[in-house]
Image (tube, rainbow over all chains, first blue to last red; front, side, top):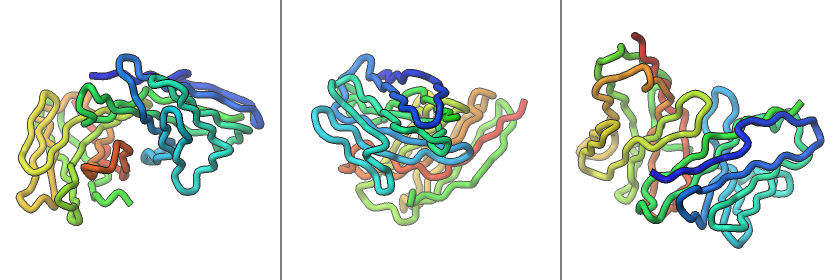
Length: 117
Length: 111
């Protein structure tokens, strides 16, 4: 199957700083990628849809100025958590589908665990 | 609103079959039924999907009720590596690829 890779796998940052998370499709081009957030013991919640070459679409309640998404190429989307606070500590996961494989299944990255101290 | 209902948890012995149920009583004719699973501290992975007919692949089988209001994911021989949270998801054919995850079923496999 197709491979989606996230970097870093985990990060610890100080409150008030910004953190960038990368999501790459390694062997296919993805015009659309998705960002999810998962708090402990909870399910994944869709945050935003990342569109190559255009603005991201954010779900209701997700602050677009706090969670900056850039999808500058067909294989890379980035999520920047700006002015991070402890309540932003979470597991962030991206996904994409592969046109080559019929766009049937979503391929997920391994996730990035963000801890804000 | 995930619009699917699953038991919070299930338990199985290793090497035995596991039947994970899912109710989707309000499913429409164009909704596919997808199953994903998430191992601890990992991103989800695709398991199987179907529309009307039962489906088999190397990971599992999917049995879909004739009225499509429920489905069952079948793991034929559970292994310890199958311990995960299993998500049953309705996906509209024309909805794109964003997935609406419910709470899923946490499967415990004991040796």
